[in-house]
Length: 354
Ligand SMILES: *Cc1c(COP(=O)(O)O)cnc(C)c1O
Image (cartoon, rainbow, N blue to C red; front, side):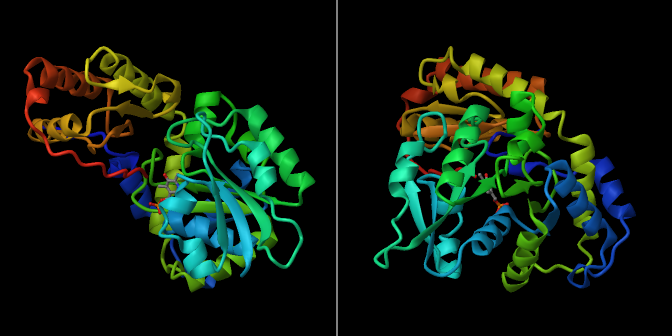
């Protein structure tokens, strides 16, 4: 039985073609700067996103942390979303390891940070305050694609107040495909951008960070300090190059599958699909916690995996096709029609999105 894993797009396995590319990759010692495949990936990613230089990291968490530590020093501050990955889901790394103060703000319903509140949060130049240096956005944010007009306004605000801008673009290519624009056009508004290769792009490991040559030189130093200096990492970078070549345009298929899943689930009584948020490869559904827990337990032996909670996130990806969506939606419908939602569950709210 095929497992239909809707918990995240991180669960994808490398394809046979990707594994072939990894096996064939020339390698060297990347800490010496001598891995040709890592160098190629870094150059390719930078060119694709319109930046001078790139840096391959083992994780998005490390790419973001190296970025924050390159933009901000001890006693500096970054403005960030309350539920942003770089604030809430990275162990507090900016504060713990970077001595950087986060200034979290609530996201708007569309995943943007309200710019009037951003401006109000910028600290005056006075020794009582941390020095506000950076605005950090996330795109996509819980599946929501930031509007291009918003990015333009955010850039203008940042410029007016002397802030740099970092994009946590873990799913930048999902945003670009959803909007029908190049990823570069989105990246153009930012000083630095991190992109996950291990989410929708389907590699086993890795992220890339891009920015100016000077910025990447600083980030490379932080990457070493953070333990991210890898040696013959070309076998991993090769998966990234393969993904950039073969797994970007196909994200549209994940988006179609998510739309189909959202539509099917919208007809079920106990699942309130957040249709406004359904813009890329994620379906968010408000559910009773007991019911979603009972559903997760019931689906598992049927080969469908979901994380239960009051806000259930279902994610489509490379290892899920249209038939899998039909099957998963059919099983969820059966869960209700068989009355399993009426049994006592044990509500869990893991709030577990990344
Ligand atoms: C996954 C993710 C990251 C990075 O996560 P890693 O697991 O460290 O690669 C960063 N930001 C967002 C929004 C993510 O979803």
